[in-house]
Length: 505
Image (cartoon, rainbow, N blue to C red; front, side):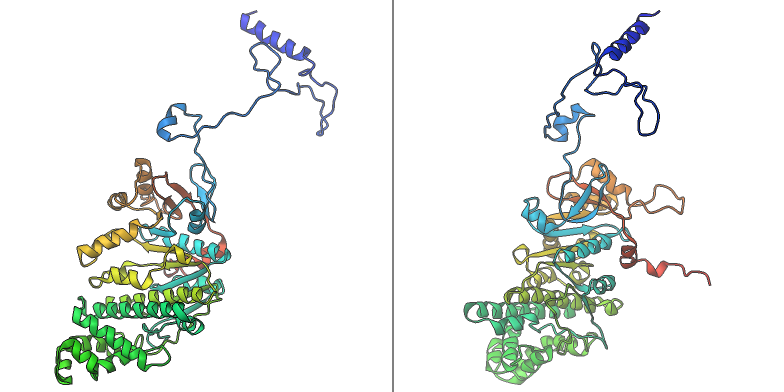
């Protein structure tokens, strides 16, 4: 008999003689079979070098970077991703459920602001994760707002959530850019310094938006003199309108019949000389009333804001095939209206946290120089107003399409200031641009790049990037997430309905 076999038999005999490990023969288990094997009652076997112990304490956990603990592999594990918020999927490596809620992350010190930048190639599900977030945040008590829905892809979800969709276009609803919106109600309910502050907020937004519309139509900046003329003419139009809802035609009428204040700005002695010197400005405003945008922004608003509704959307998809300036004007006016809704509800003591979505962001900013700064003025809210914002785009090349280097630099700053980045599948060129905003490891780059296209030409399989996202914030390792949808979401979030084959008849 070999030594190894004798040792094995000896260990078996010792285990059989041990009262702790002695087989419990003759006993019947629930399945009706006699037990013929030892029943372990302590850790290890009662034999030399068998590791027997009456008690085993839990191991000590240490935290460190992957560079520090890489030598401990395979005993190093990730620190986990116990992130609270709306469930957006499972971690692709650990299968842990991942939640995303910028407001909760802010409260827990994980991020410094509640802005999100969402980027990826078309068709990989950027709007899907935005819609999942909206559904969850509305359930948490947020108000969902989609100002300027260019494709109308959020309308079905908004209505399903019990919200209100306003469709803007010719023959549809109109949106007066100079309307104070819900801020008008807030002004009526306040007094003193608060009322003065609100009036100045309304005035500043109106002026910035009117300047932006002029820039969009002429595709060039306004002069200093024109800015002064717009400022004074707007004040005169507001003074003449006791409802706080002047329209652009009201401003045109003031400029057409200039009082002494306007004549002094242009140093003109007569109305005829004034009209000659200001004809470019008058013709530009005239195009807002009689050109391609006629009937949309030149009359009182038919849009109202119910501050108790769970979600609101301004659907401008009826203008999607129009020229760029029409779409840009609609988007900027919608953004200003949404900002007024948020400010107005807070001013009258009915503040609710808001989730605001700005999709196709750069269609509004690439039309003319200076629109990046002006859009920031009319939409500026931020975390102190209880807002979570999601800015969605296909590519950082959209930034490079802006008219001036100053605009491009400001736009890059807007992207970098967001506390959270959600990245879908994209090519190396796009990842190079992202690296200038947030650090990416080689593994993260490879993962996002692998989602960009199927590895083979074999058809019939799901696209590798559908529903997969890398959530980044600061210097931390990103969270690779795979999202799965329930049947209701598959119906509400579907943006490929135009390509669905009709069932055979």
